[in-house]
Structure formats: structure tokens, C-alpha cells
Image (cartoon, rainbow, N blue to C red):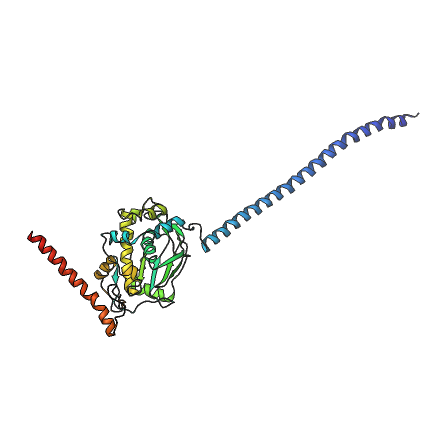
Length: 354
């Protein structure tokens, strides 16, 4: 064997060994390059996914914010049926015991315009307020009580006033979404904003004219009772409702001795008297009670107020007989009380002599 062949044989293992040593290093480098490229791809995929999630969250918040602004209902719920039941249980004797509640009349007469009538031709009771307003929250209680004597609410949600205003979270109702039926008057409520200040309702052209002429500074609450009487601002101190739930207030209304009952029922009696002027004292079961008639006599009247419907006397027959026989039959009825009076008088005089 020649020397050159020996050298070639001796070099081959070295070359093979170098190749064998180089292959793992090349494989490692290729693996590292693949790992780096995979990580870079994963990183960009992760960044993209994060951006998509953030965009979805932002979009969801914008959607929810738009929905809450367009149709805010979170501060409104159905009124507890027990509350409505307590209001229905307020008896005439309780109204009578409270009377005016020693409150000054919140009513101001409107004497320069014809009666306001609603879409059905009945006298209209117009309310202008907002859910955030604590004074409106307090005023709704006597409004609901008074209106319930002339009709009924089939739907009357509950809410509270703003938690950042005076008398925060005053328990009350809302007329937004309410439904009222009456044979004697139409009810037209407008709640401008919810308790967070989001817009709710706007007045009609006719209602805007009423506000512009009778309530030019836009005060709330504002009541217009058939263009005969108005109430502007609070009728009593909302502070008496502080810390009370809607259920607590309704329960106290059944006790005429409580400050809550004296204020709310007192204002309700004033409103009832004004409504009775507009309805010509109908229904008689409400309007002809002695305490409502007493309040009515204290109120100035608009020349446009309707003439009260005369109530037939219960002591006289509805139709007098015109025949001779009928007159003869009527005579004992007329004479008998006179004989009784003379007999009682003589007996009283006899006892005096003894």
C-alpha cells in the first residue's frame, strides 16, 4: 500500500468525524431558527388576539352605554302590590281626619284662560317633572293619592330620586310608563329625565305652550289642573320621607297621626278639591264630602270653572205626586213630624216644671 493511500485512509475518518460533529450543530442552529420564527409568529398572533379582545370589550361598553342612554330602565321597577293595596285602603274617615294637614294651600288660581281638556274631552291634569328631582319624588305621592280617587293606575312603576341631589334616593313612583284610567279626567304626565339625568320624554306643542305661559322658568314639579289651578314647586317638605322605603311611606299613610300622612294626605285633599272644581263636583261620593267642600270654599274660582252639578236632596222624594190621591197620601208624612215636635217640646217643658 502506498503512502498516499495510507494518508487518504487516515484522513477519511477525520473528515467523517468532522462531518458528524458539524451535523448536530447545524441541526441545533436550524432548530433555533425555527423556534425563533415560531415564537415570533405566536407573539404576533397573541398581540392580534389581545387587540381583538380589547376592541370587543370597548365595543360592548359603547353598545351598553348607548342602550342605557336610549332606554334607561335600570332605576325603574314594578311597584310592590302591597303598596298599591295600602293606598287603596286609605278611607274617607282618614282623609277627613287629616283635612288640610295644617298646610297652606299650594294651589294658585288661573283665571285668564279656558279650561284645559284632554284628548277625550275631559278636564286634563298635566304633570311636569323628572325622576332625578327629589321635590318631584315627594309631589308624586299626593298626586297619585288624589288621582286614585277619580280613577285607577293599572301600571305605576316605582323609582327613587337621584342619589347625588338633595334628599337623595327619595322613594317614589314614576309616571314614565304609567297607565291611568278615569271617567272624570285625563292625566297627561311628562317625566323629562331619569334619575341619572338621561332624557326620557318631551312635551307636546300644546304642553310646551302651557309651560311657557304658566311656568316660564321651567320649575319642576309643575301641575296644571285643567287651566283652573296650578302648583309650582314643592307642596311640602320632602325631608319627612328621608330614610323611608316606598313600603314604609304607604304604611304610614294609613295612620292619619303621622307626619307623612298629614303632609301627603293634606296636599292630596287640596288637589282633590281642585279636581272637583274641574269635574263639577263629580263623583259626588268624593267631592260632596264636608272636608272637600270646606277646602273648595277657601279656593278662589276661575270664571271658566264649570257650575257644580246640583245634588238631589236625599230627604225629598225624587218625584212629587200630582194627583189628588197622591197629595192626600203625602199629607200624613208632612204632618207627622210637626206632631212629634210639639210632643217632644211639651215633654221637655213638663220636665222643666218638675
